[in-house]
Image (cartoon, rainbow, N blue to C red; front, side, top):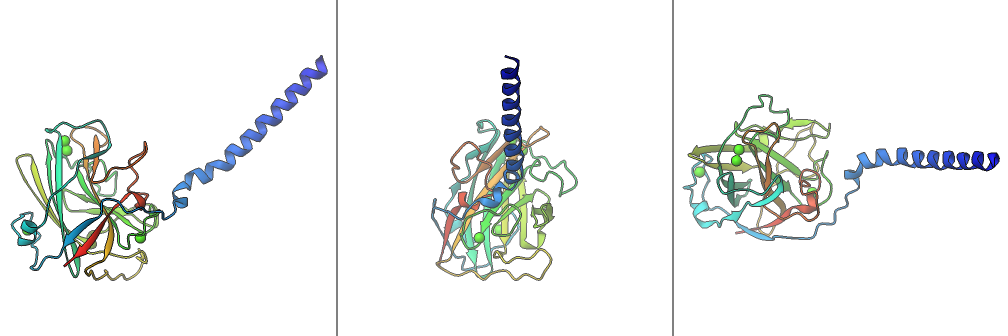
Length: 263
Ligand SMILES: [Ca+2]
Ligand SMILES: [Ca+2]
Ligand SMILES: [Ca+2]
Ligand SMILES: [Ca+2]
């Protein structure tokens, strides 16, 4: 009897050890999980974006002729936080392009604008900000700490932040010219973006790509809404994300929509 109990104890010990070993072995791969996202993009939300024949002035005023010709798209998919009320948030956007840039016009209605974290590289997603996702070659796939795609957070003060290849936030202000003007609870954001391909080097010289008709680009846009909390209260995107975890855009370019540039 004693022997049997001892054997049982040994068995349990060995089993536990095995479990412990496999657990430990899985930990690093769990942390590196984003590295294993394959480029399995399925084209969704394919939208035609028309070229601007005249220059678009980045002044936060939407009276440029390109905007009159472009259609509004909803910015209404809740990726994080509870369901929204009309007072708390509503948003929509338009797109256009020229040979050297992609243009975004966003109209955001937000009851309280906050920009209280002074350091632009500290929790840049917890102040109100516009976030624009660009996958220049529409490849899809993982982009958390590389430049297969970009997730530009544009703060109310114009600072632009994304994750660098050093796995920290970095300013990419040279990629984006923007201006926002708030009237009442409505903010107009006008944005001009230079696009870079996946060879982008955080420590080298980089040349933006030239845009041309029939080019496809992976694209999504979102708004981080915080009104009074330590962390953002809502994250609202332009495209439905399947599954429970909808905060995937900053890691996984497979979830982006696709835009098709047209003359
Ligand atoms: Ca303008
Ligand atoms: Ca709000
Ligand atoms: Ca890419
Ligand atoms: Ca807000």
